[in-house]
Length: 212
Image 1: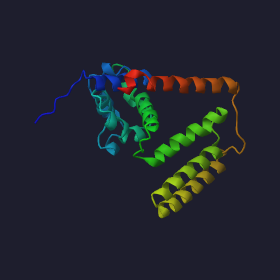
Image 2: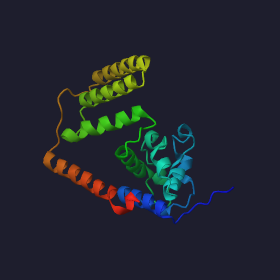
Image 3: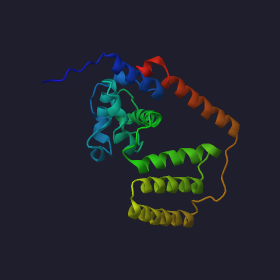
Image 4: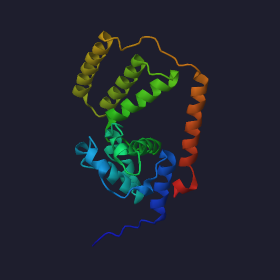
């Protein structure tokens, strides 16, 4: 029995409206030409869930499938999809939006290491406005280790520690590790922008349309 797709349903318009508002991308302009899919470098690693199919999920209101899929964690933000799109849809920004929504809904990421990397990077960068390598690597190692312990991956933890130590030594030799944090100018202005961004995202996610 064929499944009837209700393109104009409230559920579909609710999800698409929230994602478009938060990402700033006009998903209704996507006509599935698949030019984005032909250049996606991680398409094979996501079970061929390419940017066009992700947009289709959102437009059809498939909230669970859109928030719990490998593409949003394996996307490398190369923006190849956006540069090839005839309607300038930057799917990488859509992916970032879905990451935030998945975090807000406490959906366990399909790639825990990528999620740990992402959250550690943001936490280390937003403190001083510029990334400190030691702070970032310390946060990532701690999150990755705790996640491995929760999944009883003792051998994996040991191997990850060795890999991180080796990578850290390479960075140290090349002068890419700063022991003291580097701060940007106008940190107060930077923090105000961060607060405004969080407040805006919160107001969008709590809007009546997004609750339907």
